[in-house]
Image (cartoon, rainbow, N blue to C red; front, side, top):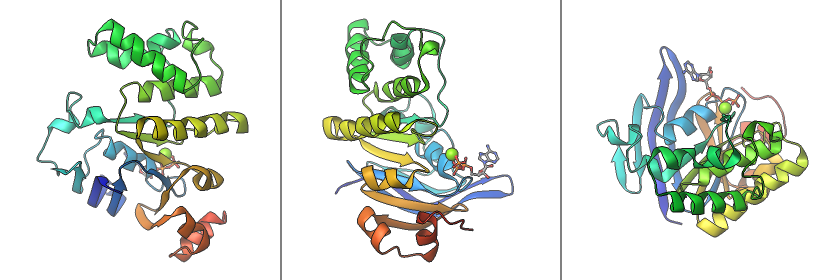
Length: 248
Ligand SMILES: Nc1ncnc2c1ncn2[C@@H]1O[C@H](COP(=O)(O)OP(=O)(O)OP(=O)(O)O)[C@@H](O)[C@H]1O
Ligand SMILES: [Mg+2]
């Protein structure tokens, strides 16, 4: 599979605190890549860097062959063309006090996109997440599961090439978890979107991902196929983590 994103010797520190240490990883076009690891391992930080929300303190990112190592400022601005190709669904997405439609349309509206195009894109996104029919409802009155699907629609309304998902099924019941997983599969199949998902749900990794990376204290200790990680993990700590044991 063709490479979409390459992460080279990536380091991130907040003051004295090193949160990501020498990360090397290739994200392939069209794959579903799961990022797992204990709380505080650095998953959200890595997703924020991949989305150009945060500048790493070291290393470089190569997106679609373009090297971005701090010298290029454009992707860190909202107007950067590279940034428009990716979308991050936050761990705790905000819900605006407007209708479901307006919540999903927000990002397109502020960019001054034509009304008919907005209508079409929002409708398509709401259809994918199974929320078409409640577009006029106040977003704050949605159930937690529906609100998460709405946030999903907001993340895919731009039709990003890369979708970064930060624990999209945390705090959801099994029925809603299954719905979100189905949406993830559909987006990949229907739109060819490349997906990176941070999750604590190990069975979910097995169900939806092609490959997986395990972060531990800011280090990427293993990258493997799903088959490989569950049958023959390369690192003893990976095996322990997958069994639900504490790892350090
Ligand atoms: N802006 C910041 N300033 C200082 N430290 C930070 C900042 N952002 C993150 N950290 C620290 O970086 C470490 C990694 O945090 P991160 O949120 O990436 O972990 P995580 O793997 O997403 O955890 P969880 O599974 O609980 O969501 C934590 O120790 C956190 O306190
Ligand atoms: Mg996190």
